Image (cartoon, rainbow, N blue to C red; front, side, top):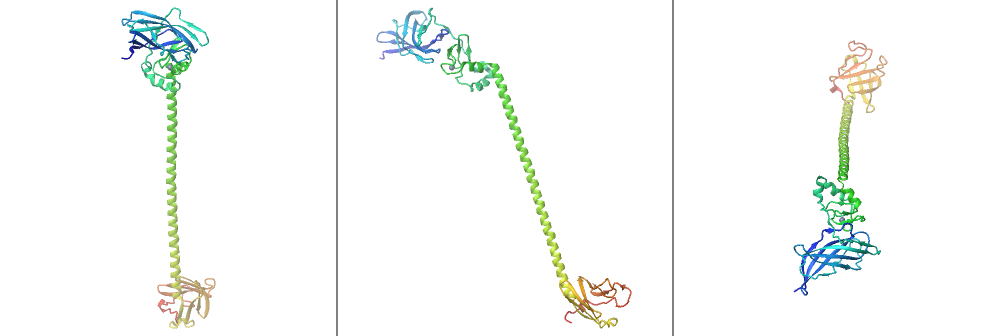
Length: 378
Ligand SMILES: [Zn+2]
């Protein structure tokens, strides 16, 4: 059987306002060997000064909360507790009773490391601190704003911040003396807590966040529109470029076609020209025509791919051949120095500028020579 048995564990809600020590927890045990209660109490050091020693009175009650006894002037010596630290729980307190149901501790005297002393002459236990409502309950619609604001500062955020003239209760639930700037439990700064806990601040903050979000959204939309417009312009440009390129290609193809057709025409013309000039060249004997006995022979010879020479009427002329037309001599500048043959309908017709086609004068003008009468071999 264990020597010690825990009868009850509890917390002391009361705190004497301004006291640099707060009772946090206690255990009431029964020492089976001597059949008496033993008490363990855990304290927390508040305030800024290091605590050297503490004296307390422990009021012991039975289960009906009737006072049984008071263990007076329990001393915790040389605890050297700095702000926020715990002490006392390793020091058992003996009580000459075995029927303790609960206790209340009155911190009576504290001696600090700097030798200064805090006293509670009247041995008051203190008051139960006001309940801190939960944040959601307290802030309602502004709760999210509070959460957002709380990200900006250090601390633990569970309960509503409360500040009085003598102490402040942190959002973590810890009570702090008025001279404490940063919560001894979570480190939250009292001024920052005060700021972000103010609903007016939260409303303003929410507005500014809303404004920022709106501005950011507007900026995003503007950027998005800009991007879309850029893409549209780029797409239009691409289409225009394509059309332009296509048109250029078409134009090129058309040019090539035209040039090809032209080349083809020229080649055809050259071929036709060459064939027909070769065909027209040759000797023809006019002797069968009585009117041309003085010039019984016409001789057409090619002198270059485009020029010919003609022996006609006893004279040799230089000539030019166009399909179906032979021009020779100085015609049409001189009356009889040359002339023109027009080839039509399978016949040659001689024309002198001064001789009307219908006026038979000088040389006969109708020389009906069938092509097939031409024979270059003659
Ligand atoms: Zn705190």
